[in-house]
Image (cartoon, rainbow, N blue to C red; front, side):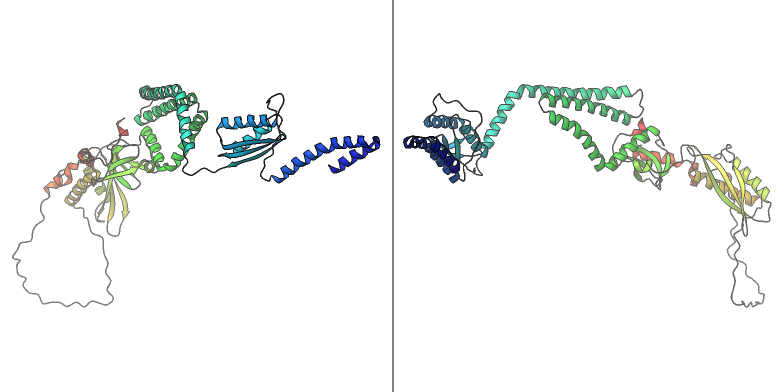
Amino acid sequence: MNQAFRMILETFSAACPRSWWRIGILLCLIFPAVTTARVESEFENESTAEMAAPASPVQVETQVSDEAIGRRLLRIYEATQWYIDTSVRVDQGVVFIHGETGQENHRAWAGTVANNTEGVVAVVNRIEVTRRSMWDLSEAGQTLVDLGRETIQRSPLILFAIIMLIFSATLAVGISRGSQSLFRHWVRTSLLRTVAAKIVAGMVFLLGLYMVLRIAGLERLAVTVLGGTGIAGLVIGFAFRDIAENFLASVLMSLQRPFARGDLIEVAGFRGFVQQLNARSTLLMTVQGNHVQIPNATIYNNPIINFTANPRVRGDFLVGISYNYSTSRAQQLGLELLQKHDAVLSQPEPLVLVEALDGSTVNLRFLFWTNSQQHSVDKVRSALLRQVKRGFQAAGIGLPDPNREVLFPQPVPIQMQPQTDVPEPTTPIAKPLRETADEATSSPSEGQLQSEAISINEQARHSRKPEEGTDLLDD
């Protein structure tokens, strides 16, 4: 600035040779330069001052004075009630603002308003931002007041949203019941009908909830709810993977029906009669009378042996006869004994086969078929063994024991005793009893060949179920 002033002075000195003219021009140039330098020195000394470039001017009056600017700004600051102990001083268009406020944005706003005022050259913002006490709850109270005011203003929308939500829930329940009745014609399983009906009802309710949130002006929350439903489903699926797997297995098993109530099955090393199929597990009662709960996922992922699906069950047993008797005759006699028994089915026909030539016996395999719903295979086998033994003995067919050879490392000396009179035994030797019971096809000890399923199912009806729930086998 001094260099520019010097250049101007030299120019006017050359153009105006007279001294008084030089003096007048010099005074006109010195006064603004001195004023501007004073203002710049004040700006440099204010380290905490905030400078802002003026934007669109605010009209005060036709002739702007420092007092008018100060009064106008002071009234504006007091009207906001944001400032404490506010004072405004204006000197040559430079505004000095003093006071306290609670927020930084209020302090910046005061400087912006002063910069936008007409006639203001610069602004020195000395407003201090005071920290509120930790016990100051004024903002919380104001927030509650604003919330209450907004709630009252939105009360018609909230009431309408509640009515819509109740209507959506009622409509979902009605659609769920109607869907079960509608699906009854196409879906036989009650569990699958219930699941399908709940899925339809859930979609209707979610649609109603989305509309309620849109009406209430919560568009983002509505989109979040719809998007979060799928995410929540994935999270729940991973968290309850085993439960979901058992549930899906129960749905598939109720559709495919690999067994029925009362069937004797074997799965995962457990054998028993089926009592119940629910949404989580299958209940079996073993022949020992014990309840076994097997998860449906385990049953679905493992082989299932159903002993009752086909009522005709084959049984077998092995009998060894002597080499001294005709094998074909023994086979014919054994076949006649099988055919005479009431529990043995004629179709498929029974068989007597030579299985092996052992060291001392010819082993015959007896194969027979019986109705497992009426007779027990083990009991029929017992009765047949009894009758085959009696028939072979009556025909003179020997049933020898296996030969055993004993080797002695040293010779065994034998001494002959002199013959003496052997006294007669005081107790007569008991003669073998005549086995008249062998002629019967069954005996009381064999439980009249009755199937265990009848007694087991009778016990199951009087036993306590270890788990309550809808029995899917009732469909």
